[in-house]
Image 1 (spheres, helix red, strand yellow):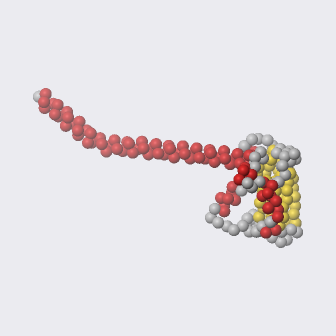
Image 2 (cartoon, rainbow, N blue to C red):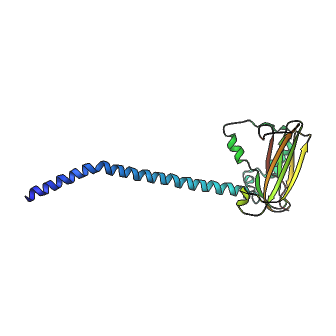
Image 3 (cartoon, rainbow, N blue to C red):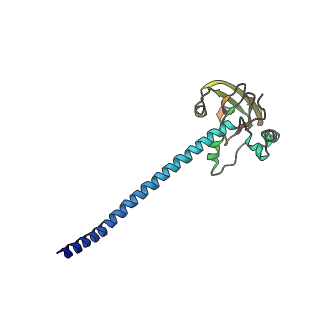
Amino acid sequence: MGLTFKQTDKLRSRADVILDAPENRNKKRKIMRARAFSNILSNIFIWSGLAFVVYCTSLYIGAFIDVREVAGSSQLVRIQKVKATVDQMPRIKQRTLISPIIERLASDRIYMRRGQSILATYSLPEKSKLNLTIKQCKTAPVLEIFWCQRVSDQNKTISNKTTGFVEFTAARPGFYHFNSYVVETPNTVLNTNFDYRVVWQRGEKRVR
């Protein structure tokens, strides 16, 4: 009887293992999928956070360090070159598949210290009028990047010119937003990068 009982128990154990094997495999697959999904979410959060930090930092750091000067191309040299070749600036930018992304990343806001400047170079169609505005935001670190409560502003209107540049100087340190608006006679609003171009970049004036 004892021998028969032990053998039956072993047979049952083997049968249970065989029957449970598909169920165990399914459980393992579910666990692995859950872990993979968790890893993907973690990577998304980490890389999104890093991208956010890099983007925000890039809007402030230029007021204190000329990063490109390390590579041998100072801001002063670049601006002088831009001013010298502004007459050759194309009015319509050539479009590519990544043009929308580049345009979204193009800076129309930066932090400036007192005495620093922002340069707007433009290329317009004939018989058009360009309105340029820079506005200083109320101090609110990081939030001021996305939401600007205006403290002061500067405006400039250009007409009867097709190419050129305008340089604004920051009277006070702070975060600034820039805007351009073009109207073609008779009162037709134009679209940037399609009908005209305005490029904003840090100017050559330094901190006083």
